[in-house]
Amino acid sequence: MRDAFRPVELGDPQRTVGRRVEYHERIGSTNDRARELLREGEEGTVVVADLQTAGRGRRGRAWESPSGVNLMLSAGLRVALAADSAWQLGASTALAVRAACAPHAELQVKWPNDLVTRDGAKVAGLLLETALADDRLVQAIVGIGINVNWRRAEMSPEIAARATSLCDVAGVEIDRGVLLGRLLDELDAELLALVRGNSPLARLRAASWLDGRPVRVTAEDDEVDGVVAGIGDDGALVVETDGGRRFVSYGEVVAVALPA
Ligand code: BT5
Image (cartoon, rainbow, N blue to C red):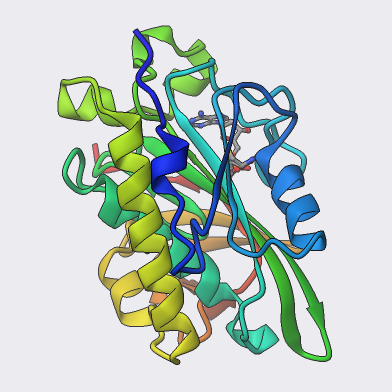
């Protein structure tokens, strides 16, 4: 049975994220709608959908989710950040998702934009679409997809091989409305901290799942093999390779060697 989002009760004009919550039973992508709203001057309105017909991940990949079981939401924001600090918005968003999910599952942040269980199974993904000008972040569309009540047994084999859901980890169905409310609170608090100049770096480092793991990372035209040594001061993934330390700012972790 489907639980309700209770979107009207969640809107709060006092804050930035979740000033208003716009619910869609079905939409192309919540990121596109949030961008449209931002263009119309609605910063922080949260677009939530039960079903996306064109839900996307990064680099043209698809985000899959059946209707009515998961959380998919986006918000358009204008955050005063220098371009070289723009990565902090992704980190803050990941930490907000982590905190909101904490009553159900202990998640860690897999650089750059996934939330995973201790075993590395993906529970949530973030899609940040940013626009920069004059070395400043002009706008950001923050998209979040969380597997909530989607059981692994119902996922396609390709997704199930690398993913799980809060409900599978917790062993119980989760009220999506309550989770959404908590997530908006956490996001708003993170955003406030960010604009006050409090970097999420230390907390990101403490929550980083990749540390100490042997990885292969694709970076621009390059492939980097080594062991993750942590997150750099600029949010880059630090990889210890045979040829020395590499700092990967934009890249994709394509393989992780898991302990036997
Ligand atoms: C992401 O991309 O993880 C970002 C996902 C963001 C989705 C939200 S939903 C609300 C908002 N509106 C949108 O249109 N998008 C955002 P990426 O790291 O590229 O991961 C995508 C890959 O994860 C796919 O190629 C699949 O292999 C896998 N995948 C797809 N759906 C998944 C799911 N529900 N759970 C786990 N993995 C999934």
